[in-house]
Image 1 (cartoon, rainbow, N blue to C red):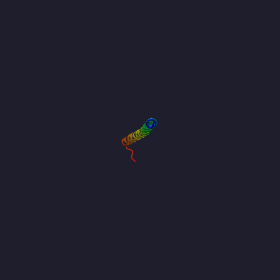
Image 2: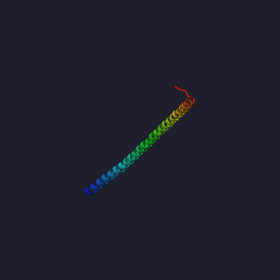
Image 3: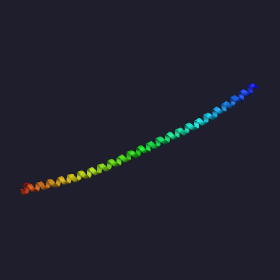
Image 4: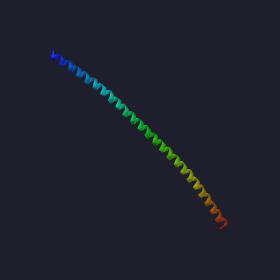
Length: 92
């Protein structure tokens, strides 16, 4: 009789342990999914920040190119005026 009770107790303990293992497996899977979600979010955020920086750099380059062209055009015009003044013998 004692042997049967011991066997039932051990079987019950085994069942509880298996139930606990299954619960821990579910929690582990949930934790894995949360980590994957967090990495995915961070990756998307990093890509977004990179794209935002690229757009800002592109805008800056475009502005600098426009400014450079204006300065170049002004320099060309000034140079042409100086050449014309030299031809005409105009002094400052």
